Each structure stands twice: as structure tokens, then as C-alpha cells.
Image (cartoon, rainbow, N blue to C red):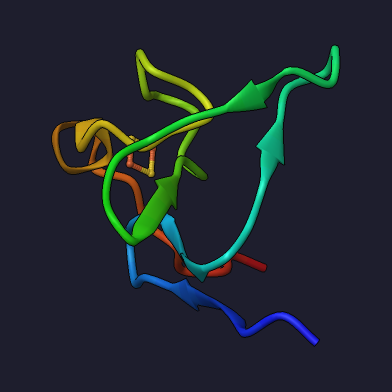
Length: 66
Ligand code: FES
């Protein structure tokens, strides 16, 4: 089994570590540098699906609102 972890950052992205392949809607493999990749969950990144740090400027909150 692959050793992959997904860290859910407070008010930030999902950070995936390990041997993982990410593909776009057409099945094209996406590439990145480093041993981990941060995926946007705020919807504001200009480099989706990757996080570009815009969540900070956008004031993204991961707080669940009922
Ligand atoms: S979570 Fe970082 S830009 Fe969206």
C-alpha cells in the first residue's frame, strides 16, 4: 500500500505527501516540485488545483458554519 498522507491545514490547503499522482479532468498528469503538494480548498487560487497562498489574502476560514 502506498504511503500517502493528507494534512488538512487550518484556514489553508490540503497538503498531500507521498507517492501520489494527480490528474486533471482530462486525465493529464499534473506535476509539481518538492515532496508534498498543497491543493487549494478556498477556491481563490490562480493556479488551481494548487494552492498559491491566496487563501491568506482572501481571509479563507475553515471554520464550519451552521
Ligand atoms: S487554499 Fe491556498 S489558495 Fe486556496
